[in-house]
Length: 344
Image (tube, rainbow, N blue to C red; front, side, top):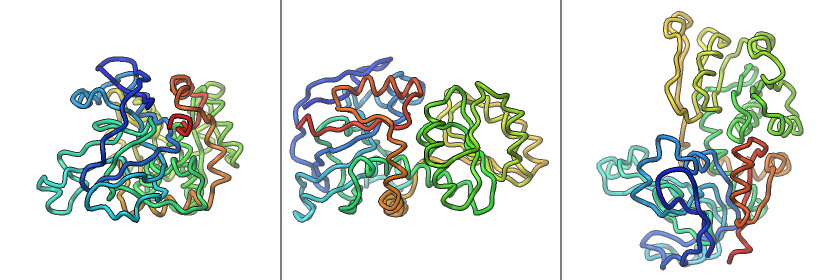
């Protein structure tokens, strides 16, 4: 079967033909992948930006962690009734044996592996994951929209971490899919949302098509001028991964406001700590959502399929994944969705 793989450290990925996986291990299932989305993490891995060195021990490894599919085979200790279930899956897998796992504190597992990072992922026809990581999908939910579940859980965690509430004015930095999803969920909570990008016309236009109006492209307007008009902000959520934007936008955060970091940054950011102290502000990090929140996100996607479909800018076969990666890198794509049916 065809698979997009990282085969060695350094820049680049490869489309390879690989064997189908063996029977799933105990407690695991084999999923026939229907759709899988390209994520910013996949770009970081392809370009080999710092922070992914631990992947080396898993190479060659198939990428892809945002996906939907149908359970085709089950390992021991998994009910046979699971076969045929339409599912998505949490990509973070735990060891079950470390001290944290034995205390049922799986979020602090010390041997965690990510699907598509530390173990084979979903940019192929078949992927194996723990059955306990799977979440069933309603029959009414289209598979391409279901594949948005994982990134939308990241967005939901960011909105929760920022304590977004009705009536607030919120700045979202970065109009990539994570920024777009944060904007959608913040608006659903009743917040007034402003989105900031630079040279991001296609992605800002995607937000415009679903009703967002306060969209800033700093290629055409000075950032300070625009933020002074729309701010100050009760909360700022950074989803761009640009360190300079942290210090540059903090002055537009209200007293006692919350600044939430979601983007993955290539280097440290300089910030004025004295101002944060005197303004009684908080800086928080947000990353992975707890398992208990996944079903709520699936329900949101099911209820808002038409809206969310407008953020899927590209639908491609797996054979065209390299052009999809380039579209994501060029920021002409909001979300590239790969369809695997042709590679059974």
